[in-house]
Amino acid sequence: MPILSRGGFPRILYIDGFSGPGKYENGEDGSPIIALKAALGFRPTLTAEIEFLFIEKDPARAQFLEDIITAMDLPKNFRTKVFGGESFEAVFEREYHNLLGTNGQLPPTFAFIDPFGWKGVPFEITQRIMANRNCEVLINFMYEEINRFLSHTDQVENYDIFFGGNEWTKCQGIVEPRQRHDCIRDLYCDLLEHRAGIQFVRTFEMLNKSNATDYFLFYGTNSLLGLKKMKEAMWKVDDRGDFTFSDATDPNQLVLFEKEPNFQHLRQQIAEKFRGQEVTVGAIEKFVVVHTAFRETHYKSKILRPMEVEGQLQAVNALPKRRKGTFSLDSLRLRFSPTAS
Image (tube, rainbow, N blue to C red; front, side, top):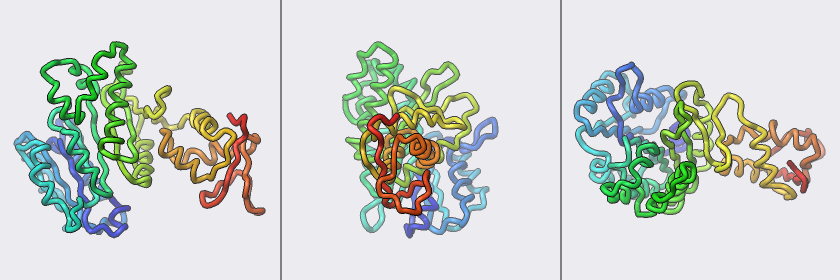
């Protein structure tokens, strides 16, 4: 939001498709209140008009949320609307054209889609959102429930709508749990990339105390900067609690979001990718951000610097005054040893 607000966009849209009551029995804030408080907390304050659309099918929960928001001291450029008693799908279909700007596009939008299963979230909605510029989605993919009912004959139509086709049926006959898990995850990721046309898709996995997958968070954006900011947020998540938070970018190894990243794993990935090649530092950073679980802050001092000291790589076009172990994105090229590891 701060980036978009400073970027000259007059409107920014936040959609919470399954908002809940805003506060739960144990006193914890729900996603709508978390979003509003986050937007209120930015300094300098946001100048764009921020529209918050909260959709909650249960009328009583929607009214509870409305009451909480009414009691909040929100600035004039914050516009909130709670849709109660209607489904996410119904509200989206009715309101979509009202949300478009004069250019026929949605304003920059962050859509949080957090269903209790797989019903009411047609894949087509994600496609329509992401067909607009500067839009992002965060989808809670309830893996445990989706996997459990994958072979139920009475759910075929619902699954076709959720996946946007019948490709999901190829995962039905897989018996081995891990292969079935990977099939479902990779299929949805592939659909987001190729059918919804999302350039960058991240898959974050939540494991319960039994070390079983409870759900995935699928994040989609067409902005490299947006991807960097989401990964920054993910690495800040406290790893204490009921879940192990991980990234399954590398199908052979989960990367846990712990206080100290596994730099050895990242070094192996960089060495394997660029062994024997000459590349720019910028190309290395893009690989780290797009194709690994790690951030752009993880690779220079912890990976490239020791590799240079050990003779695993060398700067090709460095200026005479360059200090060893410093890596400029602009023009510096690095040559990796054919035996880099």
